[in-house]
Image (cartoon, rainbow, N blue to C red; front, side):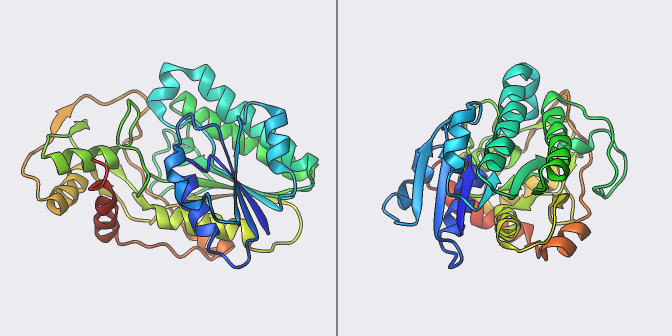
Length: 316
């Protein structure tokens, strides 16, 4: 199969592309990225691989999307502007990339006869839902423009699957972490920020009192389910949304304690106020992913954080 990975220069996309290139069932991996948030350095190791192709372009441009989809059999759509705070600061750009770009990819897939597309949704779509764990069939009210864009993608995908006989799978990621996740910039995620602080023995900032919980998910789990999502044969048309997580929850104080221990750091956090749009408790039910795609997550958070730290040691 020929697989297109949008946003393949980014954190998730580059890890996925590297894994797909090792798959015997995959003939070609084409990465499509404008490198607004991704990095060409994440792909440097693949440039001489005959199975690899790099196409620079922007998902906001419909013609770029059409060209990216030519001769492809399936798509893993990871291109997006992440971050709740970023979406609050600039909601229009988040909409143009995450929603207009998503519709462009759906149409480009349809125009090129591609039936299967998996895509990155987000646990943020659960919003203020108090249920724990979160089950795919129940949602609350979204709390940020970013969450709105991801929920809108799911609505569009549902209609495209029915009207255009497509097979679409949305992955609601829960706090993914691992190598290639950028620790720099205004919108860096909590784990890379903690990694950088621990390795420098600097005090990290924690929003709130550290009791916020997350279902932290090693990147290997996301790579696994995307690979199964694009390669597993299925009949008929459908749209599925699946939680991608470990099914375990960890608060920020415990997270810092683990990372601090791995780095042999000696400092304590600085506590501040909560941010607008933050979800306080996050835990996933992963039953549906296990059933539909035989998802078998690595649940060892301590070991996965240790592995990630080995990568951060080389860049911090």
